[in-house]
Length: 84
Image (cartoon, rainbow, N blue to C red):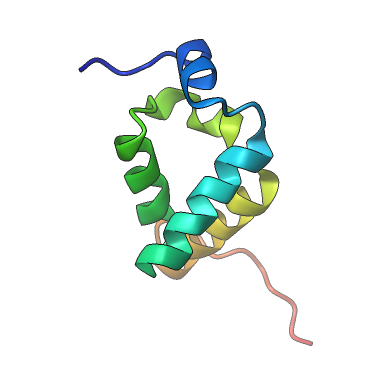
């Protein structure tokens, strides 16, 4: 089965907003007790979502959580954090 385009995905799954897509990813994180990166990949594979459209669908809070995970795993450089 070929990957769906953004418009096809939105029509078929009735995902109309970033909020609904992000809630789906959050549910996977809770259900499978996995990282946000793993949950995002799992959700996209289960729903045949093309990875190219994911940046348009994820919310800012999910992006921040992904960035924090990436920094923890040394995928991204650490940013300056001021001591409190």
